[in-house]
Image (cartoon, rainbow, N blue to C red; front, side, top):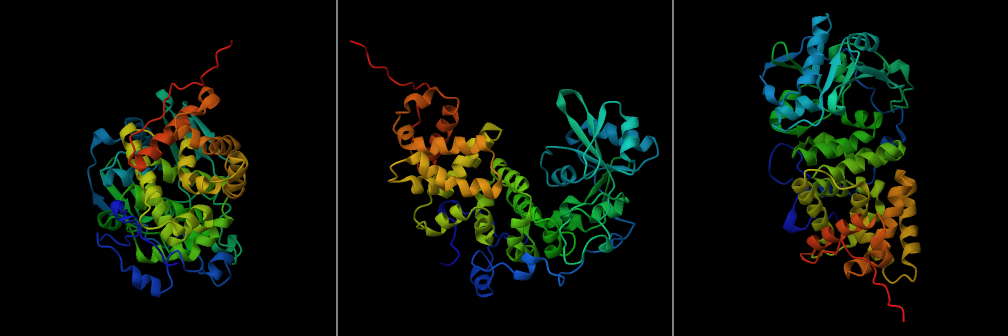
Length: 443
């Protein structure tokens, strides 16, 4: 079956491969063997010795392009600014880095503020009594402030040298090497995440071409995308997340590398895959995220059950896509994400209901459906058990007869799933959140 389009009622335009708003020529891509029906590249999955070596850490010039951009001081976290300025006063380099700089340049409100510095972890710890050193793979410092706020402060790092790991194995298992600012920039995943902001001069330091990509609203890897995805396959999901959440396009070579390297996701740590899928659902852009995963074939690797259901669903039946849109709308209206149990139930709701349809034991049918997913993505038992129970009870929940289930803590989550499902189908019926089983009168 050819690659299908998202329902016309809610097209996410997720496959946009450049800053242009025009849809790509999908028929041309199909003839070239790309997209969800293309077979993953065998060499990419096996990470053979023919794969190109990662770029040396010294490749970018030590002198960056400097862009004088005065960011709105009201949007900059003042505690993060205190950390940077104290480090600078004591003779260290220190900058705001990564996602906070990207978001500020894209006129978004940053969720977190991170600092990169030439100071070693022990130096940072000595300057901030309200801090602690964490991490085994790479030590960094959490500087603690009131209200539970944490400013993550990391020493500049550099990529491992090519001789430090086998040429046939590009997967990064240890990057515990201190470096300089330009080396730290090049080891990051995407150009839009490799920008440093100097609070002293109000300048953005760009070693990797991030500012042009910010202006073009394009997701592009730093270096060869095939190499970068094979180093860390979870970067594939991060690329999808940034595309969907920030409404960005994807550079053509990055899109092609996602299709080529999608099979390498099977080598990634399962807890990381689970968490990244949740982040795609939490951020208010689940519709576009899932659609892009489906189109590129990533969904076939991570959730083949959902991918098969979406492929078999008639084009006129857009209930699953409408459900994802309902999640996004409600998330934005609430100002916070749904509980993980609700998100995972909604993600797999339609294919699980189909699997349970007609089963004599719906609980057993739900268990059989979900067990491969639990194993593949390391889904915690608390979440898996909640998903099974909610799906098994859906017929009674949708008719307003929850019975004893209404007395359980899980019922609140189940009620949210029913409301989302009803909204997706255009229904106005809401479950009775105060429902309780009726007791028979004794005679």
